[in-house]
Length: 310
Image (tube, rainbow, N blue to C red):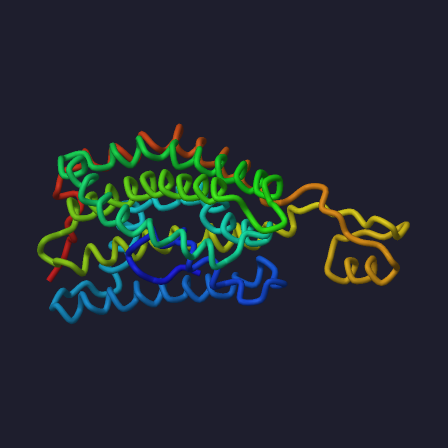
């Protein structure tokens, strides 16, 4: 679902999300294999980048590369904060389509986002160019978490405003405004992380070091989305209406309920449960680990340099 680029911002681009739903009857879980491929791709990138160290004449060896990986994992532990955003980023677009929002309209809403995505890094970079770029990351974090709550309310509100001819214009205006605010928070965190990586990258190795940092960060941001997609159905509670003694806990039970003249009614949507859990985890991370993350930028430059023994 995400590509293996060094750009975490692409995770919520609606045009990519709706491409997962080529068939309107597809379930959300159908998008999981693509995410798994993305994870394998990230692991392959890490192996390739370590090989590039050798091509550059840096004799790391096995003993040297393992500490380097552990060091970089320590540098990029902020990437695990993506757990707090996984439901909003990975599932919201699919739920809007499930509620009847045309895929074409969602794709069209991505067009006015392009100028915003061009201007935001230029504006935010002025505040991340100093010695403490992660301060912007820390400040934008709770706002992005609250956008997860706003997206859940948006999904809940969607069927209430649906009309026979589709959705009114003001609904799409609300969706567009929600995405725009979300993009401000996303780009604030993204630019801050990139600025931090540029700040701590070892100049002796050059771009390979920063690319490896970004790859590990991307790896930390991929698995929560995969898990979020997989957990939606297990967290959803359905009841069989019209067929006594039947349940809707699995696809076989749903088929049996329908065969006996009943229908499965969703009493608790797993998306809302997952959104609440993710937001709580995100705030716990922000309170407990956020300040420790900010202390990373107080380390001396020598702490991030590769120790090479010839």
